[in-house]
Image (cartoon, rainbow, N blue to C red):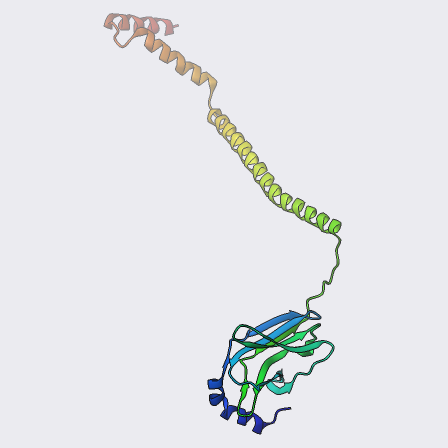
Length: 228
C-alpha cells in the first residue's frame, strides 16, 4: 500500500522523469461483462535500463477514491510485458473479471531517480440484465402473428365504420329529398289546378287579339243563358 509521503515524492520527480521516460497514450476506458476476459496495457519509451514496472489499482467507494493498491498475479490475473519496435509495454490480463475488479489501473514506473504513473485505464465490470421471461421461438412467432392481426383490425374496423356512416348519411339525404318533393304538392287542390290549366289553354287557343264584335256577341249569349 502506498502512503502519502511516497505519493508526494512521486509528484516531485514527475518533471524530471518525463525527460527520461516518454509515456504513450493509454486506453482511457474499458467495459467488460462479468466473467469475461480483459486485457490492459501501458506503453512507454525510455533510455533507462533498470526500470521497474508495477500495476496499481484505484478503487472508488462512497464518493472517495481508495488506493493506489498493488495488483498481484494470481490464477485469474497475469502480469507481463512485451517489446515493440521502439517501446516497452506492460500487460495486465484477466481470465475472468469479477465485479470487485472495477477500478482505475495504472502502471507505476520506478527506478533510482524515477517515480512515474501512467495515464491509466478505467475498467468497468458489469452484470448483464437477465431475461425475466424465457419464450421459445414458436411462442414468439405466435405473439407476432397476434400483434399483426390486432393491428389489421385496428385499421379495418374504423374504415368499415366510416363507410357505414357515409352510406347511412346518403340514404338519409335521399329520404329527405323525397319528403321535400312530397311536401311541395301537399295542400294543392287538383280541381283548381285543372280549371287554371283550362283557362290557360283557352286563352292560348283564342290568341292575343280578338274581334270586338265577337266579344260582344259572346257576352250577349252568356247573358241570355243566364236569364231564366
